[in-house]
Amino acid sequence: MPINGSGKRLTSVAPQFATGRAPTRPMQDAPTNPACRPARLVPIHIPDDASLIDPDSGGPGAHPHPHPHPPEYAGHLAGVLLPSARIGSRAAELASLIHEDYAGRRPHLVCVLKGASIFFHEMLRRLQDRSQGYTFDFLRASSYEGTETTGTVRVSEDFDYGGLEGRDVIVVEDIIDTGVTLSRLLPVLRERGGCRSVEVCTLLEKRIDGERGARAAEAGGGGGHAPVVARYCGFSIPNRFVIGYGLDYNELYRDLRDIWIISQAGIEFDHKTLAV
Ligand code: 5GP
Ligand code: MG
Image (tube, rainbow, N blue to C red; front, top):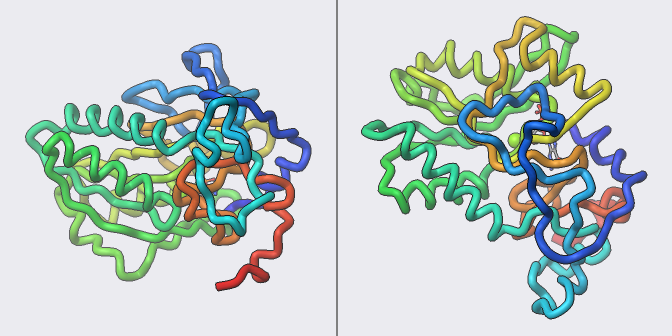
């Protein structure tokens, strides 16, 4: 999993503590991740200077522990970027759109493990709220880069491609960063699975630029790969490394309820020292 540049970049970013939700604004004047072009709706834009929720105070008048976390993570967390309640209401909106789009059909939802697992279950519940029928499955995908254009994705060997045949597939992801993983996974699913359609539902897309932005642009249309179009996308977030709500750093922090920005101490923490 590419955690390299993203995590390190945090070193120069001072967390800003404040209370309340990050303001949102339309995407029209905002940079987008070129690997991820939402087709169905505009993702909620979390600005680069979004205030984080202080993990210690939670803000004046707030409950002292509005965002509980395992005590062993004390000091590892810079602040909450997206509280789980906000993710829940966004998942409800995404589920409504899926319900509209798949009226009379039963999509096959495929969760990309492990990061998307919490979001996946949230989506399943929200689809149940709308009496939307579906089937589901899980896969693990890891991307390997041989050369710039011949990189490939390895899909878990026991994945049931037969279950995709003739189906409307929705791939559920936690986050699109460069888009490389999905740009390689989607053709594999289409070709080996024989599905009727494939769409992507991602909780987050990251706004990226520079070298990684160029790779994203390539993943989105160059290099012989099909463009990644996330038809359903929750939030467009700053180019910072996020953890929690299923997303990890060195396999830690998946157990956080909310989505946080990791602190420098969290980046440097020797995860092998944590008691099991
Ligand atoms: P991509 O192939 O789009 O560059 O990367 C996709 C995968 O990288 C995601 O599914 C996720 O596993 C991982 N990833 C990218 N950015 C982040 C991040 O900010 N936090 C975490 N925890 N994982 C990330
Ligand atoms: Mg993922």
